[in-house]
Every structure is written in structure tokens, then in C-alpha cells.
Image (cartoon, rainbow, N blue to C red; front, side, top):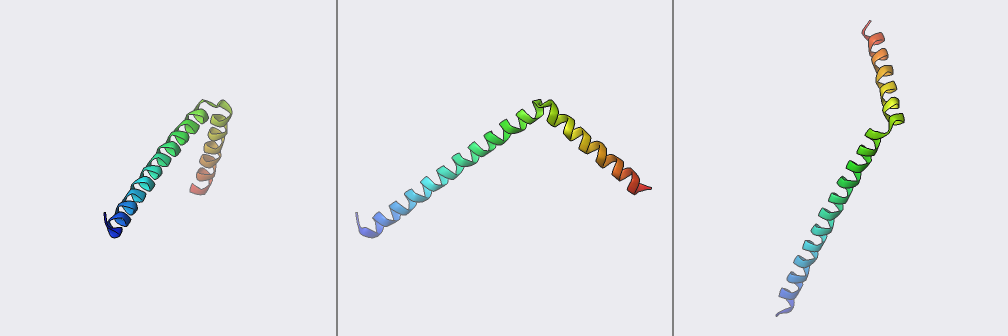
Length: 66
């Protein structure tokens, strides 16, 4: 195999490996994010906090609408 062909194969191999690593990383991040969201959904304190924020926003919007 010539030197140019070896370089091309090495470059293609590196790109494939980098793409695979990027895809695996993306899957891990999405999985971790989904798990974090699910933990938050089950967390009563967080749910109460979100409801409080929504209520405050609603009150603010009602005052602004007057």
C-alpha cells in the first residue's frame, strides 16, 4: 500500500472513530438528561417550586394586562 493510500485510510479511520465517539457521547448526554428530568418529575419539592414560579408568573401577567 502506498504512503498516500495509508494516510487516506488513517484519516478515514480517525474520522469514523471521532464520529462514533461523538454519537456515543450524544447518546450518553441524552440518557443522562432524561434521567435527570425524570428524577425532577418525581421530586415533590421541585414540583412545588415550579408551581410557585408559575403562580408568580401568572400574577405578574395579570397585573401587566391591566
